[in-house]
Image (cartoon, rainbow, N blue to C red; front, top):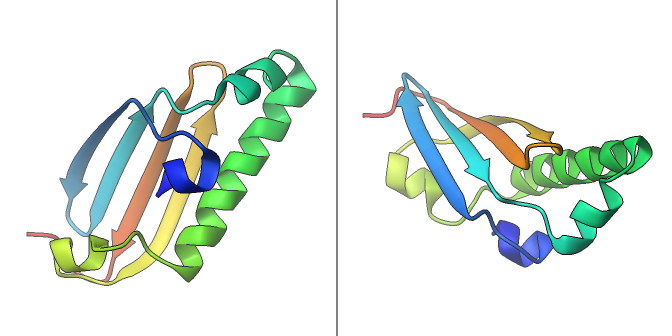
Amino acid sequence: MRKDLLGKGPERIHTVFVENMAISTLYGNLTPTEKFIGRTKEGKEMVHLARTKLIQEVYANMPPEGLEEIVEAKLVHLFSDFKVEEDIAVSVFVFDKPIE
């Protein structure tokens, strides 16, 4: 989904499940253009805001296809953040019941 939205998906994803949450760490997310923009303080802020807001808004309206079916629970919240300098994103998916 992120590749379709942003032009590039992560190079690597690590996900752990804790109670009713899936916590994903995504590495190698930035496009060459975002890396260029992120060389300045203002650019880093712009990339951070754009990436974080876009993911939160898109997932709020449309959870990733098949996600709820795989975990057999409804997505109720998504928290996400992005560290531009290290090109690392974290997404915490909170579901309506524990994931087994």
